[in-house]
Image (tube, rainbow over all chains, first blue to last red):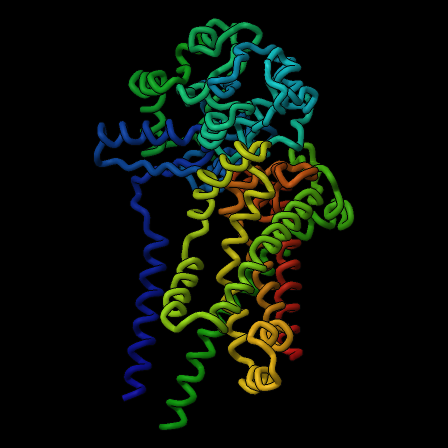
Length: 273
Length: 281
């Protein structure tokens, strides 16, 4: 009797193993895997949703992970398309890539903060740790500024570094959060904080600051007076074909671009003007 | 036939046991292969005692994170251990059976709450409380210490309680027979006798606190500077890996694995210490 039990147990184990193996190995041919920047992710998810309504037989799977992970995944073939919210650098430029939209970057504070306008130098000073209290910037409060930044390697952070910091390091005393959403949440709950997020994510829980007197609006980015914006890029190992190309074509089409504009991004057709 | 059956079942169990051990071996080898080259490049001293963490500039110093891990863990021990030990004494010595039967499952439940729930709760209640009443950004050593203190309670309580209950009855009976009060018996006889078990409980609690990631990441602020007060944000070794792994590539990713090596060594030392102490008695 016992040997039968053991045999049965072994058989079950084998079956489980086989099931696990086949589950891991079998993805439908038509599924397009898109992975990368958490800044691009929400927009890619909306695009994928719209796409699946238009083409119910096709499937797009959007995953996060971060710009660098996305590019690596695209290069290794783990993902069909990588998403990047920072400029490509070094070897990465030798890949197939396309800018799908541009995204504004906004410096935000708590709605109760009396300050509504800072110069780029002042923002740089805050993030470098030169200014530490709001009164140094014309605020009334003697409170310390709670500086909130994104983590090393984040596309949003590197965009902020290259456009605002000008080679100066962000102070190590800055609080680090791992997503645009948590930066917004934190700034919305802390009166003395300052942060930066995507233009598309600005809502009324926080106040967006004017930079050098110019507000971060779609119009001001279009006419090049507001300078903080960055590209959202799709990356692939080789020139995409088949299902991946079909999805990219949709993203770059008038429909796809209209959706991105509606969500607060700057479409590439407009950005080229 | 009998021996064949016996042998076969023995082999199957050995195979399964080996698979769990080999998982450990695989992870260890992988972490070391990925992380060690970077430590060699940067230099052990510069890596461990370096003050600047700026992977984009090629600076890999994890000293602020080591300080972060130590301060958060120390805070958790200061807040959590006295409560935990008192609770264990209460359960082992004072609690009526009914109450004990209520407390034990409740404490086990505390261990079963997912850490992300602790973190979320901390972010919504502890962090604003600290910000409003004590100052600073709220995300701080103190916030993480409070959360971790609660998280290590089940470990500290259950192991301390077990070691108190495991004492021979004669200790307590003898002490009481000599005219000691219950309180004196606990303080002068039971606690010293159960010392090694309690110390092991504390060390395992420390191990839990140092290794915790998700809950800490949400409330600790993750700043890479050396803190000057318990209201300052810090970054621990685990949150350094957790917060940056998504975006890390190349050397940066190696540096995170190297952080993992340091963490691994710390946990290993703590665990062997706990084992050594429990065996010594």
